[in-house]
Image 1 (spheres, rainbow, N blue to C red):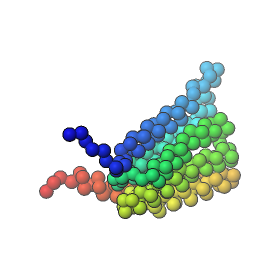
Image 2: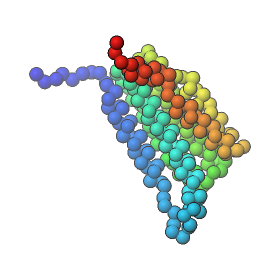
Image 3: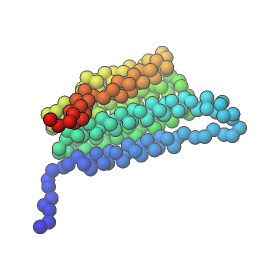
Image 4: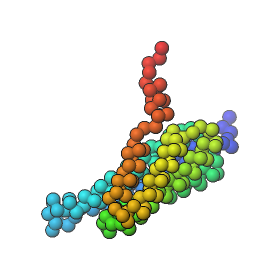
Length: 202
C-alpha cells in the first residue's frame, strides 16, 4: 500500500535548508580573503591582512555558534509552524549580512563606523533568534538549551558595542569577542545529556 501523506510539518527540511544556507554564507565569506600582490613583502602583506583574518575568524566563529545552537534548538521540535518557518528565514537572512560587515571592516579598516556597523549586524541575528527560540519554546514547552538569559546578555553586549565603537573600536571588538566566548561554552543541558549518554548501562 502507498504511504499516506502526513499533515505534520517536520523540522527535517527546515534543518537541511538552514545547514545549506549557513554553508553558503561561510563560503561567500572566505572568498573575500585574497592573496596580496607580489610587490608586497610576505611579512608586510601578512601584517596588512591580519585584521581581515582576525575579523573573518570572529565572524566564522559567530556563524558556527548559530549553526551549533540551531541544531540544539531544532532537536526539541517535532512539528514546524508557519511562524517558525518565517522566523527561521529571518535568522538566515540576518546571518547572510555578516559577510558584508566583515568585508566592510576589511576594506575600510578598524574604524569607529566600521566596527559599529559590524556590531549592529551581529545584533541583528540576535533579535530573530530570540523570536525563533520563543516560538519553538511555546510549541515544545521546553526551554532552549542555551537559556533565554544568555540570549539577552549577548544582545545587550552587541547593542552596547555600537556606541562603544565610537569611544574605542577595540573595546567594542572585545565585547563582541566576549559574546563569542560566552556561547563557546556548552549549555549545561547538553553537557548533562552527553554525560548520561556516555554512562555505561547498568
